[in-house]
Image (cartoon, rainbow over all chains, first blue to last red; front, side):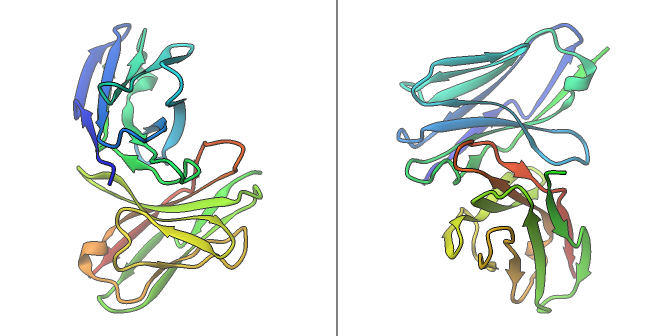
Length: 114
Length: 112
């Protein structure tokens, strides 16, 4: 089955710096890759996602890139702000599951210091 | 207000005592899922359902049962809970037109 590895497990940056979180997946047929943000004590919320037929997607300060050949995808946050501090989870969805079967990485705790 | 609700939010129980965690959504979503979250392990999918009476196993289905008799409800059943099922449980729902899964507030379960 699918396996997703996520690095780093913790990331500390200064406000205004960029942050990059990387994930690798094992099933080359996986076709959907979402990123979820979970603030302390809250539920996970989708922040950006990408399908396998797209190489990059941007939404204001966040972007996701996908390299299907290498089977890895990354989350990029520019101009980080203290409110970006949270745990970020990547996930991959195997085919033929309507994007509903999700295999998550173990999470990255991002701390943005003022 | 569009939402996913879970009950109870907190539960302490003892080994072997059957329990049910309810999940309900009012967004008319066809898809629903259950996850457990454990420190260092992230989110792991237990079961998901793509329609009424259609359920599939996620990565960690052992020790859990689900049923989807109505579109809006997707209860999680622990027939004989064990301490290793102590965890934070999330229900989620989504529609076929959008991949976004909307998570409920979570249920924190402690099995003694």
